[in-house]
Length: 114
Image 1 (cartoon, rainbow, N blue to C red):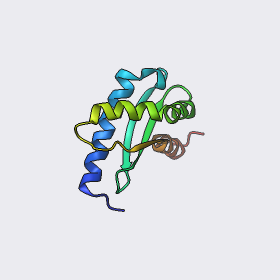
Image 2: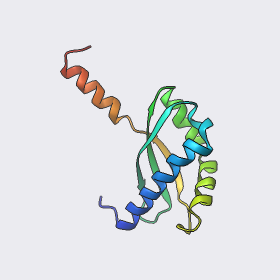
Image 3: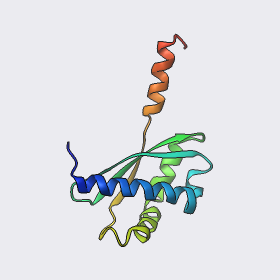
């Protein structure tokens, strides 16, 4: 699945803006956890953006649920920030990126730790 240059540019822009929003304007959503937006995938018609978060601390699934519950608010604030770059702000979906946990688990298994 090759993404177009436009999709990649929009994804990068959304990734930067959501990260800044969560840090500065909506810190209550992440409840003191350290959250990193690891990647954003945008559909070819730019109507949907799926963003993946890596979370350290707190209950990971609770943070993802809060982000999904507040997606209208996040989209509104994102639209205010991107109103000059995007005509239509895509719908947002948040997913947990557990690839770092998977890597840690493999390292533990390879090192003989239980």
